Length: 304
DNA sequence: AAAACGACCAACCGCGCTCAT
DNA sequence: GATGAGCGCGGTTGGTCGTTT
View 1 (spheres, rainbow, N blue to C red):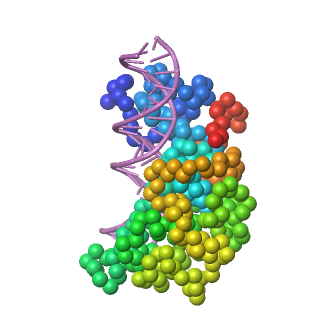
View 2 (view 1 turned 45 degrees about the vertical axis):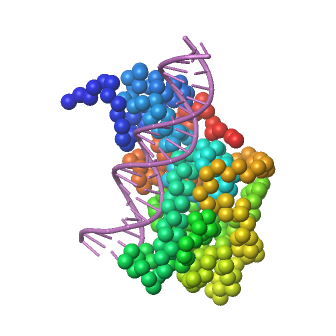
View 3 (view 1 turned 90 degrees about the vertical axis):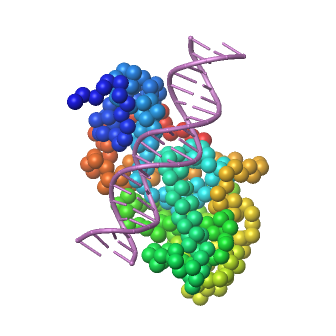
C-alpha cells in the first residue's frame, strides 16, 4: 500500500514531516516552499509547508499561550485602526501569527455575538429558545442592542477561563496594578485597565436588566470602577470607542498616529512552551532538540 | 457518567499580488 | 504587455478538549 509519489498529503502534520521541513528551512531558508515537494521531501504543497512553518515551527512563537490583557488591548486597538489586517496586526505582537490574531478575534466576536443574541430575548418571555445552560454567562439583558454596542464588556477574558492547560503566566496580567508599563501611542488608555472582570460585567448586565447598554449605571453597589473605567463609561457615546470593538471592516479613520516598534518583547515563559499538554512532543519545546545555533540563519520576526 | 455545548486551534481554500520569463 | 508560478493573506471549516448540566 504505497502512496503515490505525487499524491498531496493533507491534514495534521507528523513530527517527521516537521523535521523534514525544519531541515529544509535550515538549509535553504524560509523560501522556495514549492521546491520541498518537487524535490520529493514532503508530499505537501508549498502553501501547506509555508503555513506550517509560519504558524507552528517558526522560532519564538508563543504557541498555546493565551493572549494577555496587553495583547488583547493591542489587537483591539489595531483592529480598529487597520481592520482585519491580521498579518499587519501580528507584526506588532511578537510571537503571534496572523492566524493567532485571527482566531483570537474570531472567537471573541463569536462570544460577543452570542451574548447579544441571547440577551436580545427577555428572560421572562420567549422561553422556547432560551437555554438555561450557560446562564452564568448568557444573561438576558438587552433588547435589540446594536452589534457595536456591547463588546465593551468583553475584555478581561484572562479571568474568564484559566482552566486550560495552555494558559501560561504573563507579566502583563497583573490586574491589580495599572497596566501602564507599555506605552500605547494612541487611544489605548481608553480601554486600559481595571475594568471589572468579564463575569462581574455580566453580573452587572444581569443587574441592569431592561437598561440599554449606554445607560449603564456606575453606581452599582458591588462594583467599583477605577477613574479610567469611569471615563470609559462616560465615553460610551464616542463613535471611535465603538469602532474599536465592533465588526469594523475597513475603518479608514484618517491620519492616525503611527505605531512605534513592537510594543513588548517576547514573554519568555510562553515562547513555544505553553502547548506541551496537547503536543505530541515531550516537555520542553520541539526546538530543544536542536542546537541553539541552528536558527542563526533564519529570518527574524518581521518588525513593523 | 454521559451528552450537549462552547472555546480554541490547526489547517485548508480561494483570491489577489508580485515577479520572472 | 501577457502569462503562469509562487507566495501571502483573509475567510472558513473541522477536530479536539474542557465545561456544564
